[in-house]
Amino acid sequence: MPPDGCRERRHRYRRAAVVGSARDNDAVSFSRIAWLVTVLACMLTCLALLLSGYQGYAAVFFAVGASAAVNLLL
Image (cartoon, rainbow, N blue to C red; front, side, top):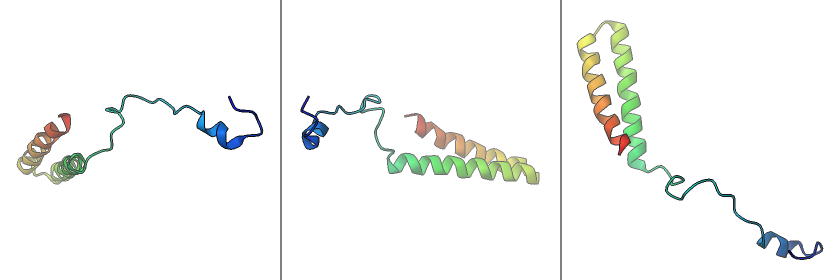
């Protein structure tokens, strides 16, 4: 450890905080964001259609959203 009067050198000796492995801390890719937006849009549309009484169209949007959600698991 450097002496107290040497602030510049003291900062070099600090250790980085360890949060997790690099794999767990990767940035979210644009394709993953696009799939997430697709799933959310389909689920919101499904809910709106269900509230309006269109069960058949709601089921279609639910199926599309569920299919898109599979891509988030990979």
